[in-house]
Length: 531
Ligand code: NAP
Image 1: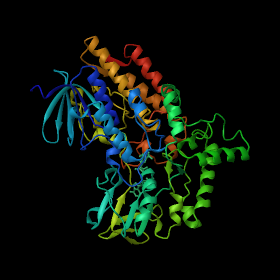
Image 2 (image 1 turned 180 degrees about the horizontal axis):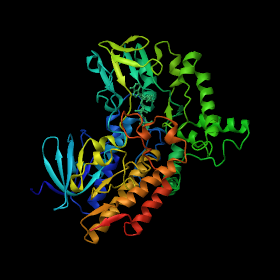
Image 3 (image 1 turned 90 degrees about the horizontal axis):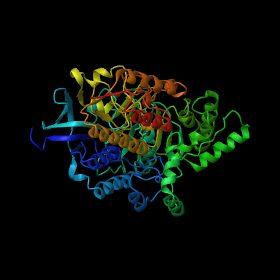
Image 4 (image 1 turned 90 degrees about the vertical axis):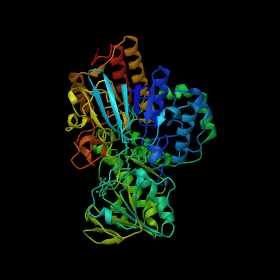
């Protein structure tokens, strides 16, 4: 092994997690390289360039807080930042902190094997290069492996097939074209209104309708920006004490404690204000089915008000639990169904049978279009990790270890896989918290942990199997108090991927999660073996 190949830390992924991890590892004086399959930084925001892609978290919150200079000097143009601006921000951070020189772009990692004798990870790239490192940090993202359903005939389609999660860099002009889109989750809901304005005809193939709340996006209110910047650290600190680390104005009363009129007023106000805080309208929407039904009825009422054709409105009205699948946030989604060039096709009752040369065939009919867009989501949270052949102690594969579900400790570490850390892994708040806040908390924890190991000359840290078992039970215990694990086929549980083990993956509750992590670190990394 030559000096180039020998590293202290390998980081996989140059999204927001990998970038910040690189910054922190350098500060520890560790020789670090990031391997990124894309040709630029930004992760999710690098790949998801479909029309209308934007964040559903307020811009003043969806950004790094580790550098006050960075957060003071950057200005967002809109309440919810559009994808190009978030990507610009990622590039700005990469330049400001001189990150690019340690990132290998266009570089896919195929395997990571731990060697017990040397306590090193051996990393192989798709091109056959080899690197060795003491630590591995998996910053592979929660929504980074596209779900491409196994539709018969997909390869026969003569037009272009696009996936929202791998959108062409130059975009596509749909003017005068017919477009078919499969899926009606967050990505489709953002893309549909814009594609409908461009395409001559848009066919939307819906299996399960989603609940969507208007974003009410607008230009950044400069007074609000100045107010937040004047007290940014307090604002961040207050938010990190909230359930999802988001400033979502939670209401502490039950939906069932108030009168019908008060309930409607609360929902109306939240609908007018827009966005994800709708879920915080009452304190029991996630735990009480009757309370949840009141929110469901309210949104259904809105859909029926907006959509003129009532049989289309009926199809668009979900009957599932609100919040069980990720709540969507839109601009003019429901209104788009009043356009003459837009049709909704029900593929729940009439499933897609095959993709044909010119379109697709359901059990009810055939449809033709020039472009097929798959807005079919992701093999979430575990997909990108398991795409890499990861072998730990005794040559045990992560894929085998996780065949019944992603067992790990704190969503940060897996027993049998020493010195390997996952950022926002399953078993951590991740997608059910403000992602950037969750990322920074994980990277800071890992960085403190490595500092501790270096200081005490430990070579190896590995999670105990017993601590891992206990953690998995804890994640499930909390999830089982809610309506989410059993309430729908969501990607939170892996139910969107055939044969994926069904287990509720995120940990619910950012503040209590942080307490767990701090407790573990304070108690000499309780639940880990250090040697
Ligand atoms: P998604 O929520 O998983 O939605 C996928 C859609 O494809 C669903 O409507 C699903 O229907 C449909 N689908 C999948 N396989 C199908 C099949 N074989 N036949 C017919 N329909 C099929 O994926 P997404 O919209 O890409 O969003 C994923 C997550 O990314 C979101 O939940 C969110 O966390 C994040 N995201 C966030 C934003 C934002 O910040 N605003 C934007 C986009 C995405 P079923 O429901 O029936 O399975």
